[in-house]
Image (cartoon, rainbow, N blue to C red):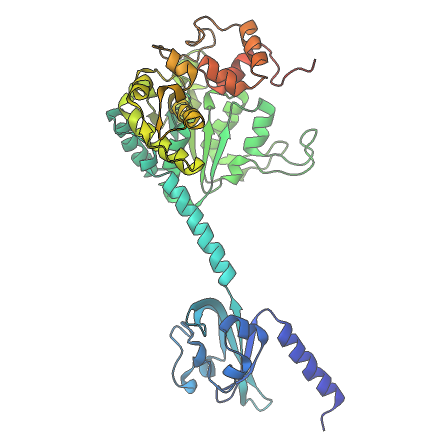
Length: 466
């Protein structure tokens, strides 16, 4: 007669096995399955009634002691090794598909050291496998986005850029990408990173012109709790976030002398210090920078450190403006039409000859970004299967000829036909509801240029309250 305590222990053990998320089954000394918990039914598809009385050959494990499951139970390595360490493998589901699992096993012996049986556990990796697949698919999409083919161009100048990108991708050298706003400098940086050995590590992007010095220092290098008012906790910066990968510093020409010095030290020593901390932290990163300004001229003017300049331009890449590669305009138009067809579910097939002629004659001060915006604008208006000249932005079809844009705040912007002044900029800001992107579009400049004008003339970045 069983003791009540033994009965309770058995009931508790059975309840525990039944509630486990892991599959658990036991075998006797002859390797015959004697118990099979509900999780095993869910993982394998076999009910306890179907499994009990069979060997574990039923599951056809793909890897057990570095081999497939043996036909003879006594040949199983568990009897020699005593345990099966957790091993990632696959089992055959009752329905015929493979299930990714981690299995482990252990011999059970009595006090006389005789084998009583075997306990095996099986952990379902289906969700983990799906998560891995999603990560791989995301990584593949990033690779596809940043393949050289997504940098559109068959012109000679763009072919030279492709050669330079390929060379940079095979190196760890610091790269300086130079080109006007809207030429695709960020795409070039992405192509270099995602075609390099570091592609599985982060690509961290920082727009250096968007933040004042104090915030940029913290953004790049991080800070410790109490370093300044509002620093309520430790925070790692973008350099640490990019560890093992690449940091892309856009508009590097706008950083202050103080940030220039800290960046120089980070490049030289491969170490950074968080704001408010003296501890040096090692970072393994590849640095890519970009600017629409002429850094050499800024060095000559004393606005940019010469030693940092030469550290950054180990491998320079010059991106040509769109007006210098007009052969690529039809290719880019075709690319953007396909892109916006997918996005808007429209079926626009192309562009009318007179509309194409206007786009070919236009000087594109905003470069590829402006062309993309023009095609998106046309998609809003186009009700046919072909973009007409009347679907294009008004300022493009009204302007027969426009000389190249110049980002120098002291020179007149081409679209206004007269020199930009503080009062004229304020007038435009009021007209556009302080939408700096719209102001930039109207004067043929980048948003960065508008920010620079506003900073120069002490104009608030947000609309003043009445």
